[in-house]
Image (cartoon, rainbow, N blue to C red; front, side):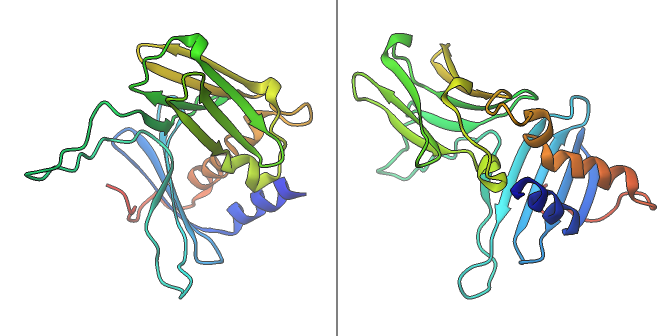
Length: 206
């Protein structure tokens, strides 16, 4: 079963963990050389950040890529060019009961938006009836465990120029999000509680 394989992959990974700045920070080095780095809120246990770094075709280290977490705008500024800070900003910020995406700086009325599931492509699609915004995105967590993505679990709201798209824990009648949405955190708990020595080591993200 894919869920069990992913759990086994997490358990076999070499882990470095520490607690800093009110966060649990865990770095995973997998047997295939890929890396995953996560941060959890120390009080709420909510996932704040997840980054991946995969090996390149020639075996070198690739760039870190954000999977979960807030994106701090990094405007490109020169004498001639300045990035438009009002462009829609797409980011993922999960809760304990749902996967959640936020699109900021998008001010159309609620009735303009349409959010749907493409089962064959295993992705969600955001459209606007005025054809001003289109976004297709997948849920890597479900893909890693080969869990189904169902339209009945999809919902969205709009307020304060932000569209919030959620996939709830009811995405499958056979599984619970509490088990698999935070499947990595289950291993984090194991790491943090089963170390025989105090947590120490370096983490790749300050």
